[in-house]
Length: 507
Image 1: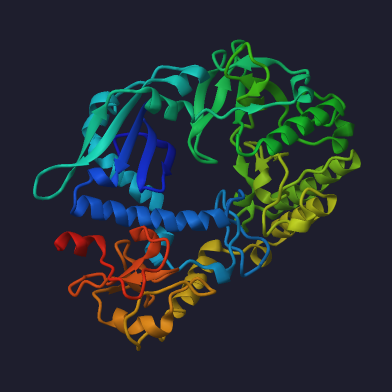
Image 2: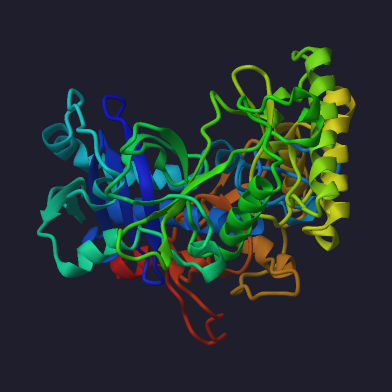
């Protein structure tokens, strides 16, 4: 897929194991649907089930890590394991997946599997030499979409083919749903900044940070270029907070920019993006917001990338002093930054420090929950930032190294599983498999071991975790299955035989 520039715009699955993926390929939009009922009875269906099972497991893990961060830990807390756009996760919550799950994102694997049958469609509809036209923001969201459905072929190998669908109102609504808007109160509508319709703005570039891929740089009809920050309809509060605080900072005259002639007063100002405009999808509706425009920072790099001894000590000391000073300026004017962390400082092309993201909240490892959006929380986060800048060796942890250590601890939890008779597993207090009675049956099943000694089961080829059920098929290759992989919500009755999908088909 290397000839194609591909960005995933949306991905979801439902309770019936159907998936839908929307992708932008060489600036052409595709929407592909996978339904297990259309995937035959052999290889394709089994592979789809395995990949989807892994996605579900990692999705459960993602819920634990929903706050944004780049993955640099300054807390020296062994329970902290950062990830971009991810909350920290304790060592006791370490997932049971094998090392493949740490090295490969499950969603990415499923995305690639779903998109592979569309290679000829990409070549025809979005060839590598395709030069996309410059689009307005409205056109970016409302450009034509090609819809495809995956089916297993009738040949012996059970291969996949992608069948193009005619657009329907239901399919088109799926694309329209990708447009996020929020209703805004009067105090935001009354802010004295320009309003722009999506049809007024030309998209210059996009970003996948934070995911999914989205327009991030736009040009106004007057030729000015700005950073576009889109709203999240699931979190309207932080959007309103940020717009309000950016407006307040401007009214207090706290912006430090190149137009200030009074350089002696710079110590009482901060470098942060200005609120440059509000963006709507419709020029006639100022009650709903699509996003807002901010000053564009030249070549921004998160401060987390600078918490390293390879960066000069003088620069790090200057940034440490600046981060503390800007925090103090805000507090002197009664403003709480919120979500104080190194990711919310940016370093520009001239090594100047910018403070960003006034949406509030907090991120574990930087600010304690009880200090959320308080002066104490700002102080806590900035202190960790300055400590990491002063001495990265002593105050910055390697999340990859901690992840490996956590994996070894989790692997040791599967020791001592041999012995006992076969039975169907049920949930215990810890949500694990009944180890006393499960091990003997597992010992006789066909299975693989990871390099860390973990045994793999089920269609998903993953270690034991959560609730599992044993197949009563005498020749079953897998023997044991995760509830979620086979669609079980409760344990089958003791006198009821249960067979996995493969064994049922064999009968």
